[in-house]
Length: 337
Ligand code: ADE
Ligand code: ZN
Image 1 (spheres, protein in one colour):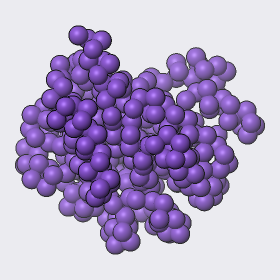
Image 2 (spheres, helix red, strand yellow):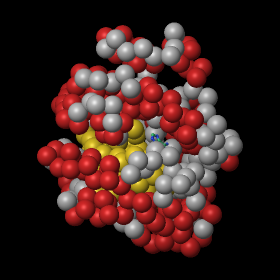
Image 3 (tube, helix red, strand yellow):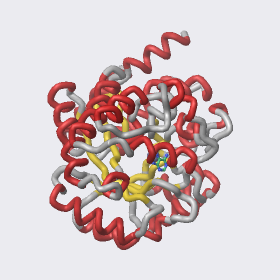
Image 4 (spheres, helix red, strand yellow):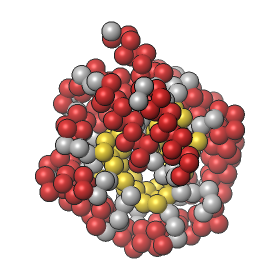
């Protein structure tokens, strides 16, 4: 039965809505790119890199994640990073992905915006043509930097607005509330971008309220701490704001003490539109299948729960019209609905 369910998850058509492309940087590829770019990294072996992936909180992870991204220099590097992720998820039956990229992580090191986006975009297009994986691209502002820097990034993105579907907000949450970015989100939404934001991962429920009321997000990344405020839960349910939940990330960053205490099942019981996602799979030891399997085992999820999570992801995706209907049919057909 256990292997049956694990197999069922592996074969299930999956939709990913919370994925940082820089967080898919596997140590093997990091070594290869570091070597060809002649960039030094503070590790001698892949083993050593993996041993460094022990985090007590979000910031400890971010320090290592930004350092790793520092070896990415050329369009080919960004292509290879993205292509390698697409091949991984293709093997896991992910049919649609909505990925984040963090332009400031690269532009602040002198890598031009167009180098970053061209590499990512061409791999995504190849993934669509060759692997049949549809996609959306979300540009995230780093919240530890100023709103001014976010405005500069938005300006650099405007010539590529056909390639970018939304803006997001990530990086160090506590001390950097959504209110800091109210103006830039307003302008981005006026320019036609969808809006999402990380909130309630480590930060309080008040940050989730701000993401809703000030940034006017279309969906919320993480949102775990929303459960501390029943009025907020009611609001998220009433407004049908989906949560992109990341189980293994939550465990590795000590947002939850163990998987048995993960709030995903409670979220479903409260009718929150929760979805399952991998966040930074190279750092948190697991892509979509592992994330689904970890919560299924720990929380004793049923196939009906898996169906609900999948339908939530279809509905919360930024895909529209016939494409969305087709995606829903694929999920329904798999579950025999
Ligand atoms: N950047 C990459 N992963 C992140 C996470 N889980 N939270 C905030 N910022 C991030
Ligand atoms: Zn994230």
